[in-house]
Length: 206
Image (cartoon, rainbow, N blue to C red; front, side, top):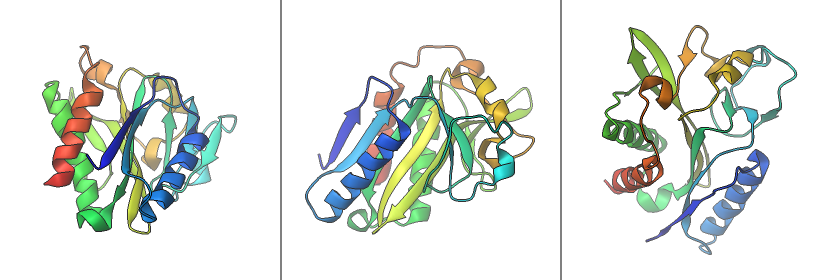
């Protein structure tokens, strides 16, 4: 396999993860290292992508950092699965639109395995679930492309503390709520990491 798969057990600092991926990007560009999939949880932090606005931070005391991924402001922490990758788009002949479609399909296909129906929204990027006629976001997507190598990735809320999102306007979308898998359907999600990896590898090759 040309993709290294890394799964971290202990929570990882956000800045450390980004530095690691940026090093890997340069190594891939020079042909020194394999592409990467990295699944982890972060130590609690709020991050703002390249299009976030200051007024989307409702509580100015939060632990916040700016980041170079696309998108707005979100929260990372315990109970949230983060799926990072460093993928060479040139080698795979994939454009950015294709990549976003692959990511959406990977998440939707994985959650379908758990009998959870989700969908993408062209207006509000991410993956959504509709329950009791209310639409809530369960997964966020944010990527960065440099030298036609894509990195960052997506996050899926599993059993995280949803009150954390009350301190921000999540993804800059007012009036829309955030949910997690446990709120949608209580069940065992231990296998979700391996299913995500399998679906990602299938979708990235097709």
